[in-house]
Length: 138
Ligand SMILES: [Zn+2]
Image 1 (cartoon, rainbow, N blue to C red):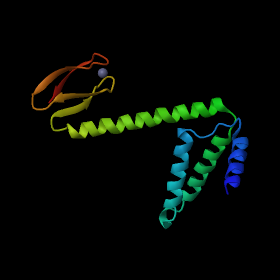
Image 2: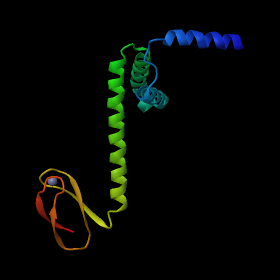
Image 3: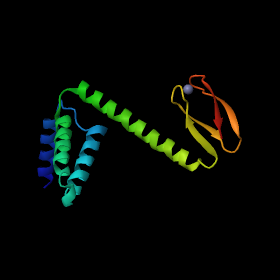
Image 4: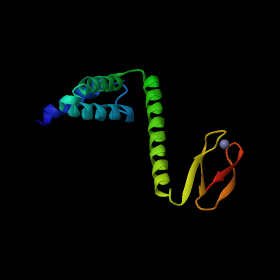
């Protein structure tokens, strides 16, 4: 058995030589594929199986790829999106937790999200991003 595992390890190492291997994006694709394929057991969600299969094949393709630059660029884009997603979730959470104390609104000129403490009447607000001045009810 040990000999079998050692052979398997050696053959895998030879197979993966010069190949890109696993990164965060591939790991995400594999997990997403697994979730979609499991969900496809439900009749109404059976269409997810094909999507899961595509995700899985793409994940394997990426691991076996020899084009490191392209795979790194994809992973970098994925990490950036993932980061932005988590920041957005975190900002939304903060906003929900403090909405009794602060009124949130967007700058009419640049769209930046701003806040003022509630219950202070009309306030003169200057956007810290673009300098636009506005009057905001608190
Ligand atoms: Zn602004």
